[in-house]
Image 1 (cartoon, rainbow, N blue to C red):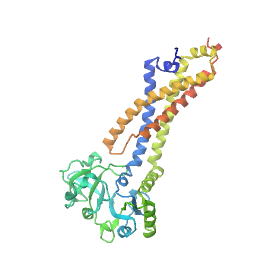
Image 2 (cartoon, helix red, strand yellow):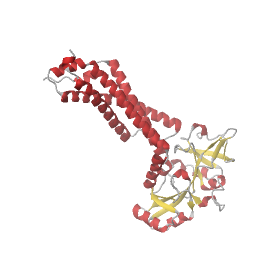
Image 3 (cartoon, one colour):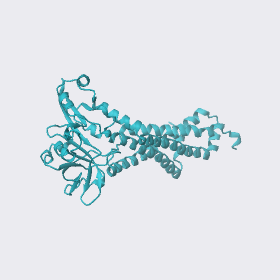
Image 4 (cartoon, rainbow, N blue to C red):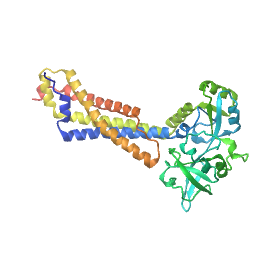
Length: 384
């Protein structure tokens, strides 16, 4: 049984040096797209890591809060009021200080740090190390250091003398949260310690009366939508209860639409796509030019336009797949390296990989269809 000659594959692979250059060109465009989308996802995902750690289905925020970094607070009494709503199992405050915290290693310069705090009797955050270090954290002047913070914070070193806002601080352990584009380091402590380091958070002299987030955990049989509506009816207008996923989506939308970095990374991804089209076009156009006489012979033998379109389409698909594989491998390694160096949340997920693969296929196919015009316009009589 005779099999048809894989002409598209042969055209692409007959010259090994040219094949390597072609794959490198497509891989470069793939890496560029992956990196821009990776930074965009890091921008969006890193900003909601705190929200993803909340141990509750509903979150209470100030009605004036447009983003977590805004630092808008509400009265602790709203937490107590939320506990009285039917369907609520518990409600706990979370304190976040993003502007007044300065961490200093003795004898060195200070760095701004985000400080998270919870009350000892509550469990509003899902931090595995809290259960084993609860007794140490209750000691005065202690905290946990985020080992995903920037290297200059050196929070992995627990025995080094430190100061937070001019007061002695001792690290008794670690946790992992990660930084974002507005936060370079994180500390976690109890509410009592938090009040000592930030006594001026509230005008009434009670620093713990000003709450940043209220975490509401529901009873096992409660419907989240119904309890959410009850909370909205029961609580005053100075706070806004939201489902945790709603708050995460709102936070991402803010950074995607209001932060210039979001547009910059998206434009970078589009430019990577355009660059890829140019590179692929040059590769396929050069291959068609080198084999124009052979193609003219096929034309003279009676092969029609659909044959050549399929030929170039197959060649474009092969090129996209061959270029994507090294591109995704290098991008994965770059994601791991940048996560380690910067602390940003950069994950190469399967949906992201499939999306970039689709973009790569479209990129190469569009380039092939643009380059095939030279072949379709060629007249066999003029080439011999």
